[in-house]
Length: 535
Image (cartoon, rainbow, N blue to C red; front, top):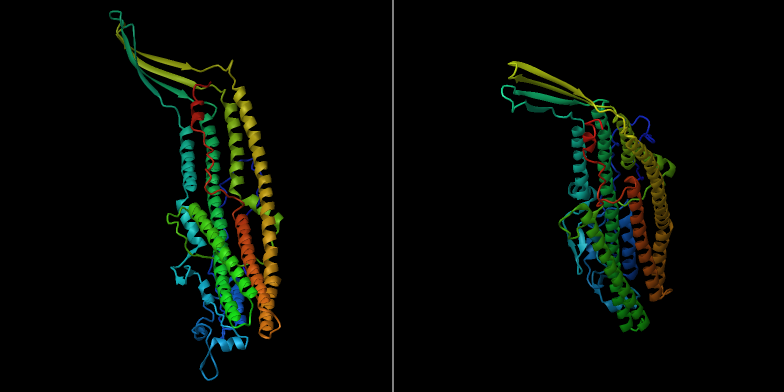
């Protein structure tokens, strides 16, 4: 049994004061990978109806951790070699079906349960071998390499780094020529000059401080998008696994139901059964056939959804392999909430934006500090036949524009950013409450089915088959018990799928939306232009 894992975390809260945070730590998400176990049950030599039902009962071992796909296959090959209800008596001679019916032992066999192995599939007529299936790690690797939203987030992170460099660069100097009194004879003045604006108030460094926090937020958004992709992949992977297992279980039981129809028809011909039994057997087969068709449609849809998230070009369904073991304990949800807050890159991005707005507020406060423009020129005066040098210094005076509007707006943005952090914290709590509800509901269901319902249904099926052979139970009652066990098995599969999906959401820090467009926190290099002129 595998215990539900949560991310290793450190404690952190709202990063407002210092705003010198680092990128949110990455983590290895818990993975539910492994081999799908198969059942080891086979039919007994006499091919009796109780053995057939019990062969389906043992398919439950497909969902248990302590079974293996190849258990018992070699040992019971001889038993599977019998054809059409013919069994060997003590002398090795074949006994006819009529003799078997007379002794209340009917020719009722099913295909080997080894068909549940991960590289075996049912093609509509028979089980065929397939190539090795996809594990969760395989799909995750494809998704991380192919998801366009993740690649977009990575590109935006590079963009933020470029903008941070740009907003801190100084203004270029101006090189020019000047000429004066050119129209007057012998009074021309010619020269060249260099002009440079000196940015005061540490504005350029403040610019880089602002964009540095933007870059951190964008890197956290990149990590957030990674978690979104992985969570979506895992949720859809386990949804597809559950659908795949339902297809397998339904096809196996459809085979049982088909042989049940044959038994009912044989009993009716031998005047040991009734038309009602035959009709009931056919009804059960029709219902199971419909369930198989619906399960196949559900599996196809789940596979297509998974393929779209992972960016798989080949959309043909392939076999999926995973360990659907049940976690031992229910998590401490308060502790899980604290861990998620500490680890969440979504929250890290919001905290980085708080720091960005703080830095922008400081930057706007420095804006009224006037820059100084220096002008140095050198030339020649024809009138005096001497050289000349011009020096000019200029600076705007903050009389009318003290940037008060932008300062107020920047402070409002800061307040809004702090509220956004609180909103995300509450959103995480809300999403965790929903995920916890899904997890605990599925956990209770899985445990109830594993510990009580399935063992009881299995025992009931065993007893009903024994009573049927002893003539204490009619065929219709056996059909009802078989149907009950099949339905319980399907519900167990569904519950395990729901449990794995809920665990995946928690392991993925409750982040979903792998194909949603990532947030772009960058806002160009306009802050650099505002640094010049001192206005």
